[in-house]
Image (cartoon, rainbow, N blue to C red; front, side, top):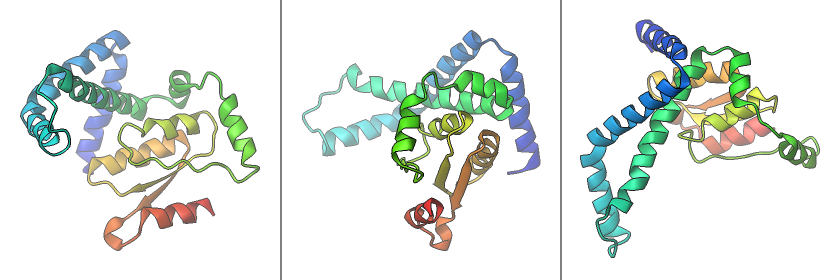
Length: 187
């Protein structure tokens, strides 16, 4: 990732911290609506493909679009949280993401009797914050993920260092599988 782009992301996320939470939420909603509006033609084709191939009896209705709009809102909210997290102090991040009652997690780890627990997520998409929250709260956490193109890899590396979690990056172009890397990181 070019240095100028990195610095721009850090500047924007630093300025973003200065804005009150209600305004950032409003901004997230506006950005989600814009992304939804811009992506509407694409998702119309995806939804049509769904109706044609998966659920041919489904009729076109606004009810079908609610999940699409919710997906865009979640996407923008996750992006806003990532920008905030990149520049927030560890103490501020822990205040925001503190687990109120960690006892079920502690019990699960104790049941593993020193072996720990392996939780496999299908992708880093909206699940990316869970390992960060676990690591911030003191739970030893390892993520095995495919190398991402461009700035996403830098965001993952920086977030992993800040949260204190282990990030095992798999380069699929070199023929390494996520399964093998997960197996090695557990040992």
